[in-house]
Image (cartoon, rainbow over all chains, first blue to last red; front, top):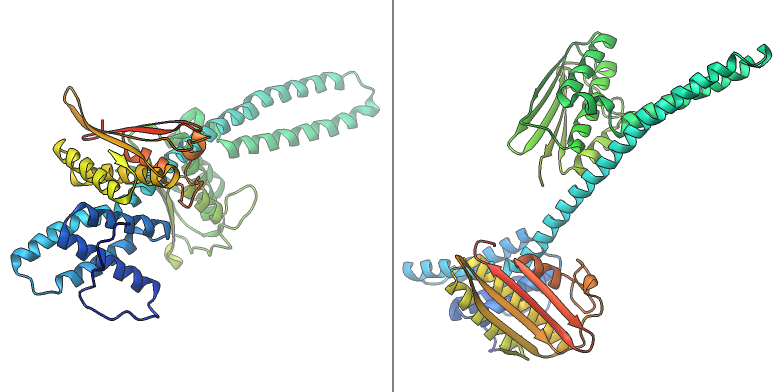
Length: 325
Length: 129
């Protein structure tokens, strides 16, 4: 690079052979910053850029660069300077620091782009899941219904001793229907498609209340339709949390609250039961979701999961998902 | 402006910064423009040993910006799509230079012919577009 002679660090500490890597980085940074503060020219700014580019290649993070810069700045200020000189120094150091961080802007933007692409991919997969769910639920369902009718018609014509065989075929058909229904439900609950998230959650709550005698209140406050991927996740996680509250928590009531806060969807399911530990409650069972899967699904949408176990004062499962990345 | 040594890089950055300031770019955007110069000249020095950078002011109605054309007569790039991928590098780099610079600028075009060299044309508009 550009060489215009060695500038020594202000503290003038003699170089020792067992410098740690960080000390070396600190020292190089300090030299480059002082050089810039003295010269205020493009050569020194290029020095800052090179430092940043190397730091990026070495895998340093932005926060690390901030602390390295702060240490170097503190050293630079640790000299006899009048107020005017101090003010000018503080003003000038910004340009240098911006230069150092500029290469990081490239990778920062790359991550942002990758995130947007992931979300688009996610939406596309969700669309595909929707179509497959519909095909399983509706088209395959209708075909199987015709098979049932054909089977019934055949049953009237076969000799009586063969009727039990037809019974076996019917039982298998019913099993296939069950499996397809579960599969389609897992991909995209049809009720979401038909009623939308708020009504689907109400229906879910009614079902739990009826089956388990557990009162469930639902409050949904949204500013419009949500992306299918978020609707799906909120619905299926609420379903799982309600099932857990009903089966394991000995709760007397559950509150489901879904709302849009700024750019986030916050969904919480709170009960007043005795709680449960992770293994007993969100245990991996089929076909439900375990806590790990819940975290994975929410993380895939850029969100977070908080499970608060308040001992005998209940359990709160809250998920937060950003609307946009 | 000829690019054949690190001091030419300094001169190109200086000119780009002066034009960016003249065009009314903020300190951050001026730095981004000089970063683009650094990335492109770095490629020129590494792969073609020398080349050229032309920096000019852009004016289009009320829009104001800076245009950079970086060219060399080096070996050229066989597969442009590949070098524009994140993380792809044929040299010592990390493969962030070309795709990273594209993201820093508003417009970015790369043309290359094997044995004939490479030309990158890019623009940055004040306040993005």
